[in-house]
Image 1 (cartoon, helix red, strand yellow):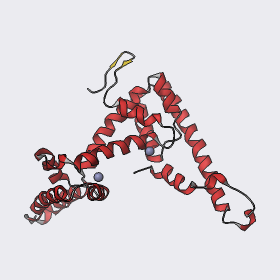
Image 2 (cartoon, rainbow, N blue to C red):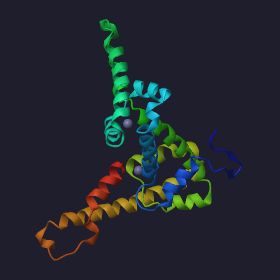
Image 3 (cartoon, rainbow, N blue to C red):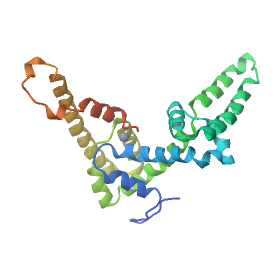
Image 4 (cartoon, rainbow, N blue to C red):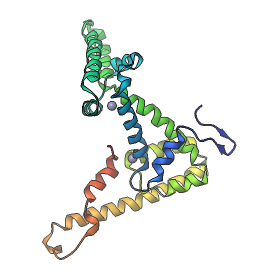
Length: 234
Ligand SMILES: [Zn+2]
Ligand SMILES: [Zn+2]
């Protein structure tokens, strides 16, 4: 167990540090920052020496990468390690074409291909560590200092709001959970109301009836609204 709770005492671990760091900054969704930091570590790891390690290669042969992560790998990785990884991944893929299934087993073949198409080595690792950090986050919410930091976050994007709402009942007691959701939804309400106003003002900048008006908060409002709706992926 990476994170231990002895009564009310909590131990700082490799998962509590990045969570704390993500919440140090007040602007934007801190859970996006947690995710983006993990993704950055994994991309740097895999586009470096790790790609040549036999046990990593075994995993990448099997899983491959999604569209986003292939693109990042091509952008950041070195040409030869990327090509060597692709060479052995293609060798793995070739095995899928060797067996022609009877009609009653075609579904099985389709589901294997679906798994291959939906798998990604980087996504898999990020998902695994992200779950550990999320677990740490909820345990850290029992500490007053962190709770204060959590409350100071500007907003949570909708995908991460969904995660927090999904996991809150399994980590928090009834009263804590209600209080947590109330604060969370109040924050979201205030932020999304502001976005609504700012985007509305941006629309008005195209309207000749408001040609004399100044809407300073409308600048960048569409990008801010999209980030809040879908998350702030780097
Ligand atoms: Zn987010
Ligand atoms: Zn991926």
